[in-house]
Picture 1 (tube, rainbow, N blue to C red):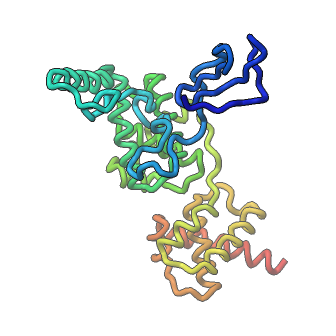
Picture 2: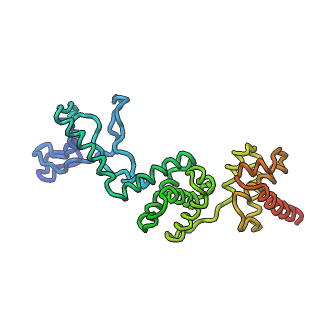
Picture 3: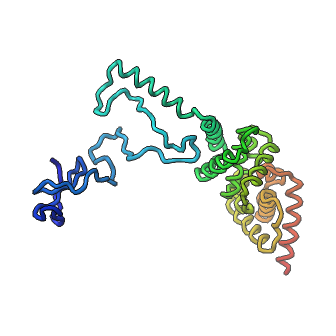
Length: 306
């Protein structure tokens, strides 16, 4: 019996023997009278040793739970390997029985209409995640918003794809991830106005409060697309901070304002970029950049002269 003796602990029953912990069964018992104090002790350490095989699965538990799975990752799966608990191969008669059980287990997981809805919506969400390059926090928030929408019956009679796309856009706004309606519309292949309609419905029915988008967070994205230097990016950030201090940015489109600040920084840093280059990178029109450029330039000149 593999065990470790703890000399500090005495048996509560006979008070003579020392307590022994069995490493294989997890039992804590007296070495003299055999009284078992506790059994099945949980081990919090790793399940492998230095000489374990490289190919072994070293994880203690399965995948973490996630709202972006139709069953939240809590469903059980019958092992695809046809072996029993001791590792021996199953008999031929038992193999067909286990295979049938696997089939029914797989079907039963999406038996309810709600589960089928979640599976379709979250497979679309997983596709949008790869296309837009957003993080896990945004995906979890989008799945949470979609689950709340389904609970309130907002999905009935509406497109699942449009609603999950609008939930993703709402999650991007809440987490302040710079993704526009146009980006999500292009990734999901759904019209921008359809996503906007579902987005307004989510805001109204779920009572979601959206933070104001910070235009400074849009600078890196536009600068990367337009291939601008780090010096220009930093100068544009300073311009936007000054504009925010003097309340010039209030009520303006954050993407257009960030693009205009980058164009101002390009002209002042001597970077050869046209309004069209910056407008295409930001996804706004040249007219927007010209209007915001005039406002920023006038305000900045006024600050310098003051």
